[in-house]
Amino acid sequence: MLNDNQLIIKIKESNDNNAMEELIARHSCLVYDTIHRFYKKCDNSNLYDLIDDIYLIFNLAVQSYKLSKKTKFTTWLSYRTYWHCLNSNKDKNKTIQFENKD
Image (tube, one colour):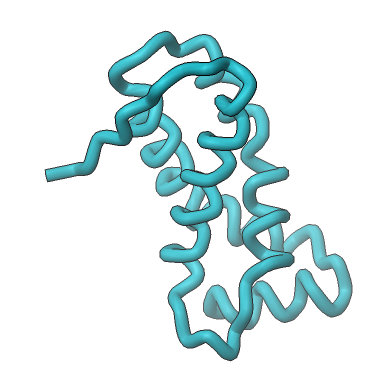
């Protein structure tokens, strides 16, 4: 079984769809949880659109992930998901309060 970094290398070098599917299967719950925490205290109109964007979120995270930074991919994925939520909400002129899991 390949680790996350090995899967990312396969995706970047050869656009391996199976590697991307494996990465999504492993970490889609993290993306869903981040999106749900972002929209917990407001209208959920964008929630389902963002969930539909999961492949885009993963693709952006994989392409911008730097192995040399020594950051775990899940940390980077969570960060990219959060920023995707912010950017998708930019035109709505809404203030969103991100709720931390405590």
